[in-house]
Amino acid sequence: MADALRERIMNYMDRCPVCTIATVGVDGQPNVAAVYFKRKGLDVYFNTGGSSQKVQNILANPRVAIAMQEDAPVPRASLEIKGIQSVGIAGVLADGDTAGVPRAVISRHNAFNRTRSESSVVVKVTLAEISLIDYSLGLQHRDQIRPQSGTDVHHSVDAATILRYPRLITPIVTVSGLDAGLG
Image: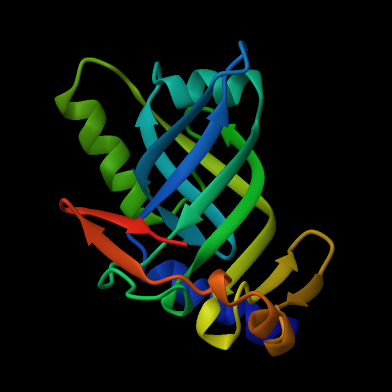
């Protein structure tokens, strides 16, 4: 089961060119940024400016959260929500320590350094917990693995809970051009 889930997660990651990474600064201020990434196994790699806020935050506190969603139409109901939520430990790779880094990340890293005065760095995130979310399988359904421990856990809300709390299933509507969940 764990191998099949890992494959589903990696296939989903491959369909997401961008992820959102959340970090926390020394002052406790949260920061979130979208980055182009590639994976190797379940590790996430991206390049970014060496003086960026996310790098400064990672150097101070390597714990990060990452969210991924493939490009898809805006869901019309909560049951259409799919994505990945994960937490892990990020580290800035030393210069020349790029063995195993996906080629696309190295290409962007090298192009960045040729065209900008600021140096690019490569960041590796080792994911500690990954949740593959698919509400079409049940409200709040998530299949979860912890790659370092090799465990997988499955969470979902049962139909009885949905019947008791029907407002949990909320349509998503457009209000003045913005998507908003009502409920």
